[in-house]
Length: 99
Image 1 (cartoon, helix red, strand yellow):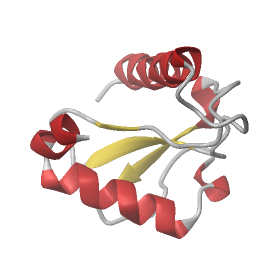
Image 2: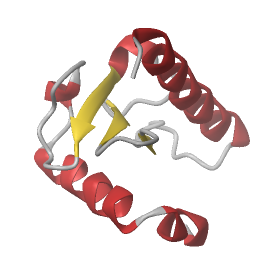
Image 3: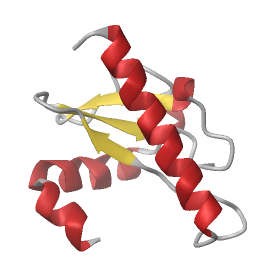
């Protein structure tokens, strides 16, 4: 995957986080996480820090399906959050459609 493609996917995650915040469905803390399975890769993107209100592309971690952060600011994401999103990504898009 090229750096440009990864950058575009990070922007998509930021846009999704912004749409979730704008929808008004979040708690007042705006705390949550968004993940995106990277096409044709055994990895996903995950928001770091949990605060979706001011999410930026540099706050998006790259996480392989094994569950350890390989790039980005994933240190701010707890292991439990990483594992929860890892399971969802591994189960495929049919899980996302039900959420």
